[in-house]
Amino acid sequence: SVALDIIGKSVFNYDFGSVTKESPVIKAVYSALVETEHRSMTPAPYWKIPGANFVVPRLRKFQSNLKTLDDTLNELIGIAKDTRQVEDIEELENRDYANVKDPSLLRFLVDMRGADIDNKQLRDDLMT
Image 1 (cartoon, rainbow, N blue to C red):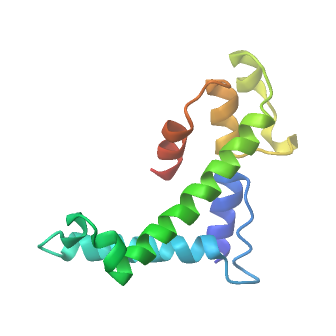
Image 2 (cartoon, rainbow, N blue to C red):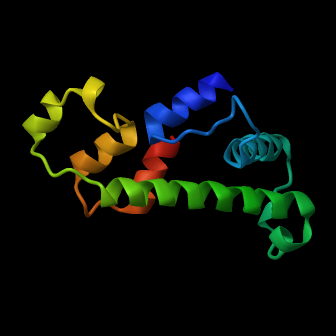
């Protein structure tokens, strides 16, 4: 739990609070990982059958978990973009991250790539 909170702060500037309480975001991550493992071990990809996401309970849960993760990431990306600090490359490279309010990887990527960065691309970069 402590490791997840550290990752949350360093990558997203987000406090999962998983040390003191059960976080819905962390639950969604774990459930999504379990489903991913299940899919990698299942020979017939039944989740590709049209409508299966609406009928199979585990697929409905997976879709709900993905929505939780997407909504949270989109919110955090929106906040980072709204608070973007316009600086040139040299200023970003020389920034003292020990003394800034938000030293996260998300903050750095948004500041580095500019305001026009695509949310989907940024979300995909952060998830990998």
